[in-house]
Structures are given as structure tokens and as C-alpha cells.
Image (cartoon, rainbow, N blue to C red; front, side):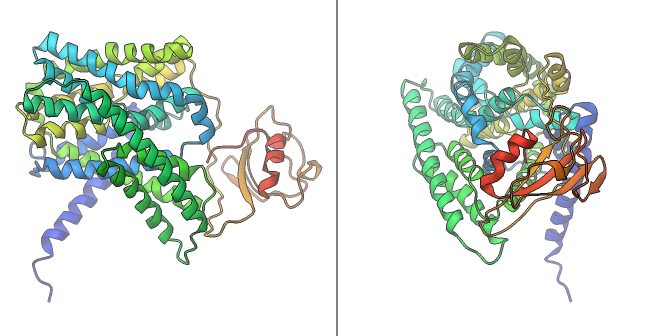
Length: 493
């Protein structure tokens, strides 16, 4: 006979299942209405909370902070895994300036507006500015993917790198200013030294752990493929925890470790990318649901004037000026500066940072949390809903082809001397209109699968490549450069 004790657990699991399913189903509205998917997850959490139809009473800021930290670790690690090294070389310097100088400039402008327009004390105003100073490129790319648009590489990579690099500076500023508000002492020049130390420790340990992780995964031989994701997950957690214990930036370290592993030929690489992508999405959904539960919608009306005003300052003044200040020295075209300044969407990081003052017990911390939540929502709606239109208007959509409806891949726990690569046959491609038998394939290479519209085809010698085809080609690693010359640009994974 079953006891009644498991019933609360069963109810909790049922509730989690319903909320997760609703979040995924509502996410379809992202492409239709141009709303960042994160806002939909937040909305589901608010509806399930005390003031909504769900009626769930939840006010555990400590649990939300811990869950949000773990979720951000997994999201940053997945972002690093999918960041190609060759793209970093062209965007690292402007992204690094945006992630440091840009964050400070944004915090200062928003803080000045909070003090001058709404009467906040200087330390509280700067704390509010620091909390909302970090961007979330995941929200931008979610909107673009939903609308079928892809950014040109330099702009997209700069935004993505900035979102992975700017969290440490926002955390440092928020922590220092929270301590300043609690103690009543203004921050001194030691804040600059602390920022340098945290960045240096985080970057150094990130590079070291990334190198060690690459060596380990190349040499580690496990009989069960499912244990490889366990190992990479342990590396991600270690990359955050160890630098943090040593007063470094764990977020920066975990992002660097992800980049190091993602740009190396490691065992079970394809499977690892899929699994960590799923973990990142699960983390994002769960994190926004919990953060939504923390907010009481009736309290939003009490701070609507301050929240709306500061959100407009952030969108129309602070972020554009910070982007202009940081990107002009790198000779970015005006349209790219304008785009970068407009689409600096905010996401989970500001809401998580807003729990710092609450957990420290500073005066007015819950009001600051509600204002930050309001700013994130408004910021996601005003620039967020216009991202596809602005991308087309400024001519920053790339001509990358639509991804094929079918994906062919090799998942192996062994390091094999072989590559399976996807190529798109464009109108200017040298192989367009050519038969496979007439093409100079390297020895040991072969076309494995042809995707034409919604049809899958087995390529044969008399098959003629047509414009719009996606072809998967197997070859030895040393022959891949020749195939790139033959087919053109290799498609991203």
C-alpha cells in the first residue's frame, strides 16, 4: 500500500511539468509577435505566482539566486561551446570593451538618471544602474531565430561575446555597491583593483582549466557514452566554483572553458553539443519561471513610473551612448553601432543581481528588485519586438541559407580520422549544375546525403547538384580544406 508521504512530491512534479509545458508551448509566440521568449517564461511564472491564477506562494530569494547561478553557468558554458574561435579573433577587442567600459558607462548613465529624475540617493541609484548594466544576447538571437533572420557575423559575434564577458563586471559593480549601501560608505578606488583581480583570476583559471579539460577529454576513454556529458558538466561546475573560491570571476572562467572545449576535436563531441544545448534551454526555462514567481504583479504598479522612465533611459540613451563610446574607436559603421546600441536586451542576469541587495538586507531592496524586473520587461518589449524590423531596415541580416530540415551527424566515443561536413549549394557555387561523377572528390571522400527541399536523396554518380541543395560529405580530416574549395563555405553546425 502506498503511503500519503509522496503526494507532495507528486504534486510538485506535476506542477513543474505543467509549467514547463506551458512555457514551451507559449514560446511559439516569439516568432509570431516578436516577443523575446524569456518574457514568456517570466509571464508564465508570474501567472503561477501568488497574484496570478496559480496562487503559488514563493518568496525564497536565496533559492532563486542559487538556481539562477547554476542556470547561468550552464547557459554560459553552452554559449562557449558554440562560439567558433575564428569568429572571436575579429570581435574580441570590441566585445571586451563593451563588456567593461560599456557596462560602467551604462551603469553610470542609468544611475545618474535615477538620482536626477527620481530622487534616489547616489549609492542606491548607481546600484540600480549596475544591476541593469549587463546584456543578454540569448534574447536577441531567440527573436531572430523565431523570425528566420541571421545577423551578419561580426555584429552577431560581438553581441554574443559581449553577453558572455559582461556578466563579471556587472557582478563586481553590484556586489561592491550593495556593500556600500549596506555600510553607508562610498566605494573607493579599491573597486577598480577588485575588478582587475577578478577578471585576471577568472581568465587565467579559465584558460588553465580549458586546456586541462581538452587534454582530459581527448585521452579519456569511457565505455558508456552517457558519462561524457557528466564529465563536461563537472568541468563547467568546477570552472565556476574554483575561481569564485579564489576571488575570481567564475562566469568568465566557465565561458572560456566552454570556448576551449568547443573548438577542440574531443570524444563524443556531437552528442555533447546536443545535450548541453538541451541543458541550457532547460536552465533558461526553469530560471525564468522561478524568477517570475518572485514578482507580485500588484507591486509593479507601485513602481511603474520609475521603471518605465529608467527603461526608456536605458533603451534610448544609456545603451546607445555606451555602444557609440566603445565601438567608434574600432571604426564600426554607423549602422552597426546603432544596431548594437538598440538591441542590448536585458534578461535573467539583472533580475538575479537584484537579489543581492535583498539577501544582504539593505533598505529598499525589494523596491529595487521590482523596479529591475519592470525595466527588464519593458526593455524586452520595446527594443525586443522591433529587432527583426531594425535588422532588415539597417541591412544587417546575413544571406546565410535556411538550415536543412534533416541533420546527419556522427556521434562516436572514439577519435576517428574522418569528418562529416554540410555544404550549401548556392547559385554561385562551382558545383551547381554538375554531376557528382564529374567532380574531383579526394580519395576516400563521398557525398552521403542530399537534402532537397523536404526530400532526402541518396547521392549517386549521375546526381546533379541544384541551387538550394544541402549536401553532407564524408572525408578524411586532411581533405576538408580541398572540399571547402570545391563546395564553398562550410555550413555551421
